[in-house]
Length: 168
Image (cartoon, rainbow, N blue to C red):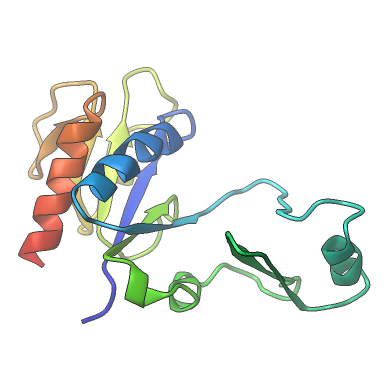
């Protein structure tokens, strides 16, 4: 069985990162180790300008691993890629130490999703709903064909994710 993927999707400003920051430790307390793949539309660099790894990557190394006792990071240059390949990113993760990989963003991907939606945020909920949505977390009472969770209750969301994992 492959490692379960669950995307947390919603419009910008909905609180995806905030909710994940709260849900991940709750899952860990339940014995559920989660990995995370985050999509960003912004320019990003996890390396520190001026450091050796940064200088060597900028010199033309296509992949650089920086490692110490506490962690390691792999940086890959992908200027020729037209899009991000979620299955490929998932394959880079160590499946032996995870029960689930949570994905922030990637709302166009065909993976199970929890949609986050708040009143007053740009964009309608209808545009986020597809056949992959397993629940909606919201601050509103919604009449939908999937469970509606309280977006302000990370325990409620974590319980739902734990139950979903058990049923798989």
